[in-house]
Image (cartoon, rainbow, N blue to C red; front, top):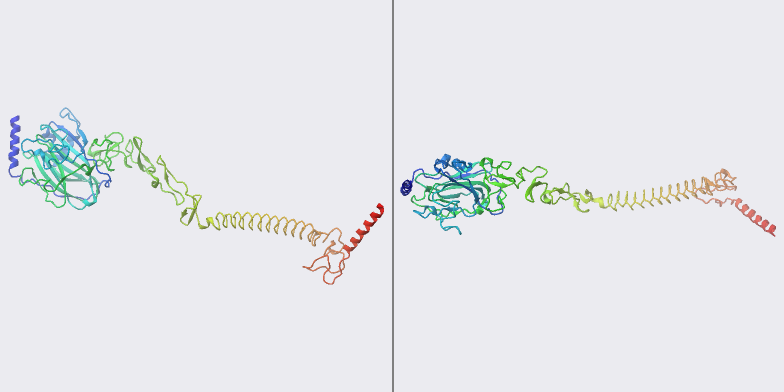
Length: 542
């Protein structure tokens, strides 16, 4: 067995120093025309999620045909451990630039790649894999979202890989269309490869990506780098002349900040080194998809916390129309009506939206006097301009304190005319119904106590007024039927007195004669009789 391995190593070196195979060339350049799955986050990325599994049968587990390599490697990584291959997956977040190596310094040092001593804190060949011996076969899969910035749109982005033994790279758009960028399966005799290809994005944002890697034995290396700008892409064995170093060509290692594990830009777990992958067939489906309570399988096929409106809470269910926002509550996420006041749309300009601590909207009225379309707000209603002035305002006309219903103005005011307490036409003391006003007032004409037409002493019904009044024409107690009148109409006054002269015309004082008429004698007679009676009483008293 040892002799066979040495022979294979010798054969690999021998073949790698000869002319490269004619079919060794990069794939056609890629143009991603689909939409991103999510907009670019404002936070820096936290790195790709990496999962690895050891193989006891790499010849079977790692297909060597282009058409079956990626699918076969995913099948191997998703398979449950069994008696034939008991190894389970080991998963973590790649928190360093993507420069991995088992740092095997034997032979041609093929595990060192193009970027030696490029990552602080790691060995010169690169950071370690999950196993770093020279005999263990394993597969590694890295997943997450690549952030394409606006300045990268429309120009070719060249992705370069140095890999020993095999690598594939794919990008997905928002409709889950797969774009194969690199596909380099294992090839007998050619273990180490440099391969590049360009990708042009038409829109910025987050795109799901997947890197597949296979290691058979001895040297293990995986470097991923990128160059923006013009470059002639190629694919050839690492030792094929001319040897083109990606680092010397202007490529730079990709960094964790370029990649995300979630659409929101947040890490998928609170522990930055922790992540989990899920089956691609479950990507972006409802439910937990084997990720556990409160997690779901996102578009990058990475387990992600359910903190969005599409996947919220323990069951990762979508939020409804009435509660469209997913927010954190203690250790869980819940769907709520609002996150802030701006999420509460007020029904009109006289109310304001308020979001309380429970995520519920309320709509209190704004301060009275706040401007609104066509007027100002009064008790939560938008009133026209005269709502605080004439015709409806507090002290204005027509309903306010002013005229036409106002408290102190005419036409309904407390002391105003036409219904006011002391105003004419219905006021307590005003005309036409007021207490002392004409037409019904207590002392006013036309019904007042002393006013004409019904007043106690006023004409037309007053106690002494004409027509029945006590001493006035037309109804007084001495006129028109008075108790002592023996003149026309039985009264003692005008139109009923006992004098012989003509009666007074309208507008002339009664009881004193008119024009050249003789003054009436009845009052003088009564006065003389009164004096006579007084003298009689005095004489008797003596």
